[in-house]
Image 1: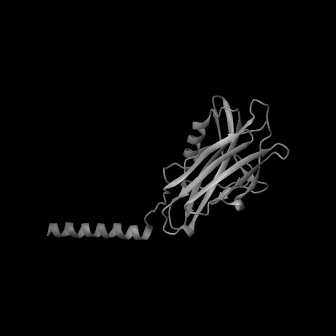
Image 2: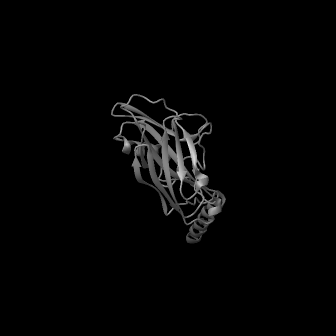
Image 3: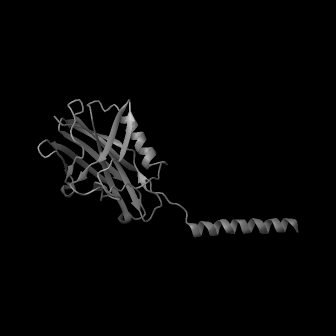
Length: 219
């Protein structure tokens, strides 16, 4: 009799777990095979980098894939590189495959921290009067797989950054900068980029590592 009672209790527990999983939903994560930014070359005011993305998705038409472009103004050494990457991960990607959306309603910083007694303010590259928001941020990545080659150039007259894409001219953009330019000891824009993925088919908000695209000199 006791063994039957134990078996009945066990079956009830298994049924309860099954019903909970059905009712609550089991998290499903989309983890891209490739999501990376690679610096190709830089020549003072011209920077060239590539973006690669591929994922085995249930329905790619329901996936929203975006590219976020960040920058900070500093000297030519980019000495705070590792700290910027770590700050981004702890702020927006607390676990390896799941994170938070970034939505800006003004020209506030995306990241801000102090390294070696120097404060760094990291902004998003944004089009004039338009703030970046999830899920596409600065640029939509519409193909899967995708390979784009981008060029960023700085115009000291308009104080704007122009982006051109060899594979998809529809992605060409002109961005504004929010910082006043300080003295010549901080005369380099350091550009970073990350890929984000959101989908109605999956539970997670995916962020790639924040990767260094390269420098652009202001002089």
